[in-house]
Length: 330
Ligand code: NAL
View 1 (tube, rainbow, N blue to C red):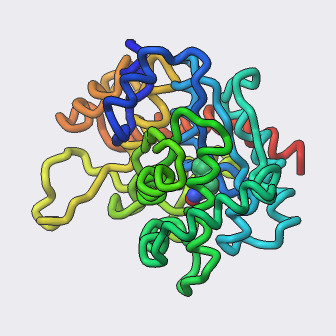
View 2: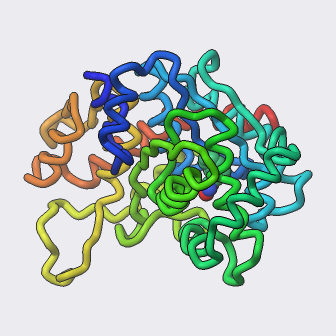
């Protein structure tokens, strides 16, 4: 796989493609960076960007994971002390999930965000940004219904972090896109460079295939799940046997979350994927790439129940080391 292809596989977009190609031409020693609001347990959204970080490490990038403790505080996720504790646990789970320990640096936001120079730069960004722009950037990130001043400060700090951590590539889910666009527009106004950004897709709600999977509503998968939990959740997932439009579903764009998880979580981590089937149903199927599995589901060669059972097995295998870590730390 060529470097640009590895960097961008399964990504929804790179802003801009030209900047992405420049990075790909010379990736060794470049730094990519993802920030997470600490929440004690890794969930499938964290795992999706983590898989992208592994691609980047394989391409030669160094990775910084920002444990965004101050951001979580600004987003009403608890007391600062609680947040710090959950961040420690999260770090161990990221490593257990497969990030390369020698090429991953973990940084707490609070290590540098209270420095005088940082705070003054933050105020400079505040001067350059309208309240409505900051508010719009937060639409898909903020928790709670009320709009608070903290939510306007949040995206500006995220923009500034990209500068302070000296990052070549900012990585995040599509829900981070507006914050990154704000960063690209605003940082040049205070004399800083616009960051190159890479965005990963959002996985649809597991049960309905509509909207995005979320930890706050609906069903999510996390490192706390037992093998039986995963099996139960995957079995209940929306997975139509074909991608043909359902006549009852006209105009309603539904994704197939089972296929999405195969594509974004499983295939990037395994050379081949085996779907076990009893001989009487045709025996095992083996796939070297996602597209052939999706095609078989569409043609009816692969039954949704068999696809789900395989997915549950692979997800469990991916989660097992982090789950063990969680339990031993508890
Ligand atoms: C991500 C978050 C917070 C600060 C960041 C700084 C730089 C790059 C990425 C960052 C957390 C993220 C979330 N906004 O929604 O979890």
